[in-house]
Image 1 (cartoon, helix red, strand yellow):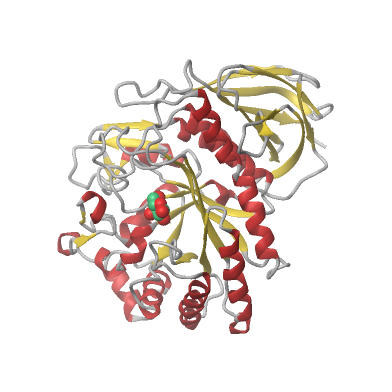
Image 2 (cartoon, rainbow, N blue to C red):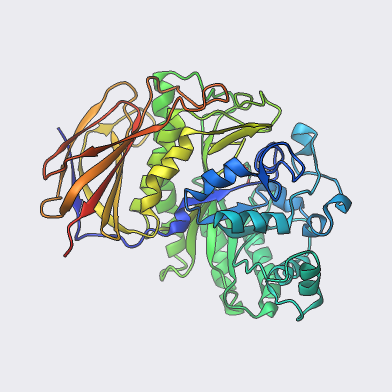
Length: 502
Ligand code: AHR
């Protein structure tokens, strides 16, 4: 029988809450008719943002939200999104060539900061490094962070309705600069990053955290070259907080998120499991130039990338896709990997929040649903800021040609405020699995709660017509050393245990 032993004595450290980060770009339906409905909408809203989404998102304790892109960031001029909304310009959005939609700039810096304030997420702003100047980005930082009365830009912010600074600490400089962000070489990218951040230094604040754009997927050589160039220029003393990579579990543009075979189920999950190799290999390349790990590894876009057209807008919203239990398993697997590698991953941002890839929400007009991905984030939220606990896994491997084997059960555990959080994913598409839990002897104070996210079919999803087809079910469990849990086929399970004191 499968056996998982919790080792309370062995830990790789604290799970940074930012691993549970999010991403919202100005693309397709993420903002317009997704997060944002406008103040005059018939849809219930708070300052123009969809109220149902705010209420739901808040429950996840979202630590951080990345904005405004993605690729969009690389042609974005922040000045388009400030001042009276009616007077803001309409612009050709980065994605216009795909969907012909223009950017109305109804959501700009102030609205985004308002959304962050209402939901408790810290802002992580992705700045344009391709089509503007370092000074222009420095001005944005000054506009956001300087006290009113001190500079003209800070006064402008105050006149635009926000006397209090936004205090934005996380600044990504550039997005996918190997591709849409200027098709740069890693050397160019590092030099541009240094050029930009050197200008930022004049702002004189140590609290700013600059993040350099890193590689695509498993392109470790890109990271090595980027880091080599960065380290050769280190005498500039530019503060560099992290390097960000993107990794999507992409089966190709034709992959159907709703109708998949057993082979495609396992293919998708094994691609997701490869995340562990991706982060380990990038970290190893970074370690060659940064052995003390002063620079953090960040995965600021991840998720499943299926073909368009299966979401409620039927293709109108670019990249909008439905999410099934398979996507939920990808989320659980990925978050378990991040938890178990909390000494390697500092922040991660699932792409994207609403009406897009691997979304937590689908919305349009009056309609709003939480996808299975949402429930995974809800089940896993107890890990945020918790002390990771190592697990001994005695579980058979899932093996398929062309992929590295991975355990048939994905798991991670952590401890915080006297509560053990154990999250499990049964990767088996058709069979339930029994697992014996060990290592708990003497640690349990009382009953445990078990929440299970599963469905009759692995292809199950939530739609406007059937919004609660996939929801977790919670029950109490008398847990003792050696207890056996049954994990339904294709399911995600949370075990929450009140621990004995001392
Ligand atoms: O998330 C959609 C797009 O995917 C982002 O704009 C880009 O950064 C990535 O290629």
